[in-house]
Structures are given as structure tokens and as C-alpha cells.
Length: 252
Image (cartoon, rainbow, N blue to C red; front, side, top):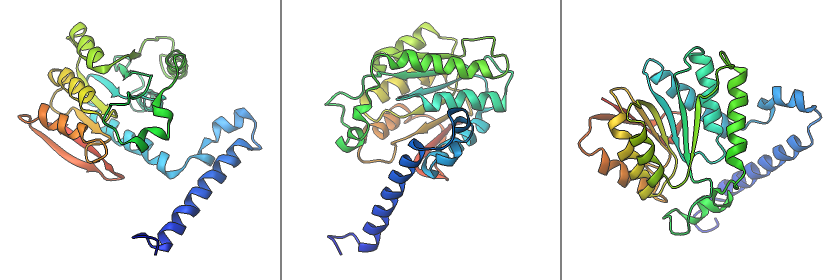
């Protein structure tokens, strides 16, 4: 034993990390040319990433019959936004009214954000760099262009800045907005409570909220914000079957 951790568990963790590093090395040294590599990314996709794709796919099927936008609060690199665009193309290829909106500072977390330090250090505080939003916007346009009605652009919006200011302003400027799905992946209380208050009038029966940190003590602000804003709401709540650390809330 090492402290309270069995040797077997430590050995298994070390083996897993070594395998992850080897997979990274093999991808960097892949014998496939870039075109083949793009078509065979499943060779290097870990189960911990694949499960995120499966979860978002299941969520999309839940809200497919609803009108309204798909929103992510806390986009980081924007992978979920790209996935939502491609899920839209798979499940409802002719629905160009399904707007996809991403909110992020793109500058990462401030030091006093109230997040567990290790959760941000691994990814450099989630600072994407000032040029990244433009790159992501183009990436979304490219994906959109490859899908049905790709000649009609404009299905995505990226909104940079402090969500405590940008979310209330966006919904004040767009009072007609309906929200079918919102993914909360910010953590701290202040931006989460601001975003929840901003979208609540735009939700409808069947709207789905996906929370990344609702049950994580390292970022208690998300749960506190949710319970404050939805204390008088009617909803169902469940852990995500394939990803138990994530939580789904469906409005009634």
C-alpha cells in the first residue's frame, strides 16, 4: 500500500497514462498521409473522448423535435460546437433554423474564479489565444459548407467575453430566442448564475440542460447557481448513463 491507494490501482493508473502517451506518439508518427488520417481518426480516438460524442448524440435525439437554439456556455476549443453542427446535419439536415451559439471568454479563467487549480492548470487555464475565435469561426463555416444547404451560411455564433455581461445582453437583443439545449461547462458561480438567469425565460417544456460540474465539489458554484435559479421550476434530473459525472436536466 502507498497511503490509502492499493499498489494495483497505482500500477493500473501508470499503465493507462503510459498507453495514452504511446497513443499520442503513434498518432504523431502515423504512416497515414493527412487525407487518410482525417478519414481514420477513429484509430486514435480514446474511449474517454468517444463517450462525449455518444452523449451529445443521445441528447440531440431528445431535443430533435423541439425548435430553438443549441448553446454551449464555456466552449474552450469548440469541439462540442463542431459536433453539434455535424449532429444537426445527421439528424435534421434541412433544418437551417437550428442556430448553434457558443459563449466563452477565450482568455481562460481568472485566478479568483473559484475552480480547483488542477482542473485548469492541465489546459493552461483554458486560454485559447486571441486569434483562436477567428480560427474556430472559420472551422465552423467549413463544416457547415460540407453539410446539406452548406451554401447558406450563418448557422453559428461565437460570443466572446465575460458571460455575466454577454449572455444577458445577447438575450435582451434577441428576445425571440428559444433554447432547445444548453450545455454548461464553466464551473464558477458568477458566470453560471448569469447564464442560467439569461436563458430561463427562453426555455420550454422538453428543453434539456447538460451540466459538466453539477456534482463536482471542485466547482460547487455550478450546483449552487442551478439550485438558486431553478428552485421553483419543474424538471427531471438524472445522471448521464454513459458519463455519470455529467447531469441532465429536462424542463417539464
